[in-house]
Length: 222
Image (cartoon, rainbow, N blue to C red; front, side):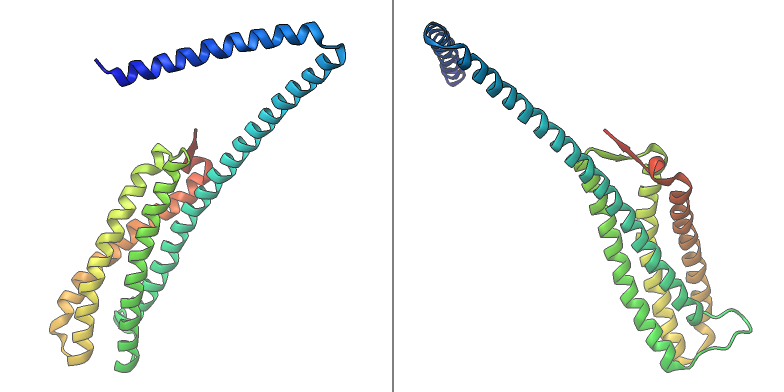
């Protein structure tokens, strides 16, 4: 037997009974000696308390609604960050892996681009972390991704992780290619570049789907 629970329940019961009889006795004494102005004052006080409660409830509901929309915008901003970073990465690789017939840049410029890609790779990792955190904030404020976009979110995280792995291999092959000026690295460069293009396309397709779904098609609010 849990004596602590029994003791707590007896305490609550005693407090309720004591409060009930105290309130009755106070009310009786008040009605005997009170004037009609006291009743009016009491009514206004009760109305003020009720109005204050209603006002606070509406304020809290509106604040929660505003915060829900804020975290939703934060999630969209996280998607925008992903888009900006992959655009810059694709731009750098366009010159590092030129199409046949295009002029190849000098070694110094190419090494600078490889260094820039390494920095962008870290930014891509941070973008993925921000996207995960933004999703967690949605759940905290009772906002969910729609069924149409929930799977896209998970797929996007996978593609970002895979893209970063492929970038590591591609940049390594490019570094050795420009350092040694040997075509023996071209097979691996082409292989990694095809994988890179595949993940890049998947990411862009997901980001484009966000635009087609629009705001109401991405989020659901409780």
